[in-house]
Length: 189
Image 1 (tube, rainbow, N blue to C red):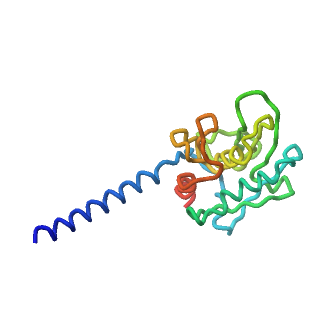
Image 2 (tube, rainbow, N blue to C red):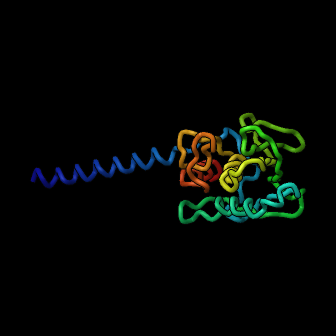
Image 3 (cartoon, one colour):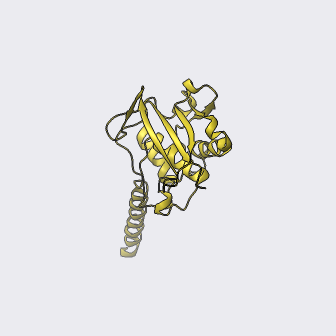
């Protein structure tokens, strides 16, 4: 009789350990305290749009692939993300530009509310501009990382297996991973 209960207790304990371990992993994302007004697409019911400046037209396929890596994630984790490209700048919530600099940044994102720049650490934003440094070859991974910022994800340099880890901190992936997507769901669901 004692062995029968021991098996149940052991099984229950192992189950708790697995559940607890999974819970810890799902909290590995880092969020900015504020977010994009209007969300990230609401499962396609309120699609969001991005616009590509002529300076970035040479990387339009890379930009599209980076967005698709955020949208087509049902094999990992479904999110409410729904973005499409627009040719009308005034319809774009995210604008893409390129620049050339010899600094160490592969790219950066600026946050705006109406015509005023804002900090994503002090208030919500209405639209963003992503600048990609064409002197570097970070490509899709850098753009996907910056897209994550536009949706409210912060740097996650403690986990090199997330897209939100900076390249200079050893990012090892080129597309959003479970932790990145869990961050979106925590912020917009």
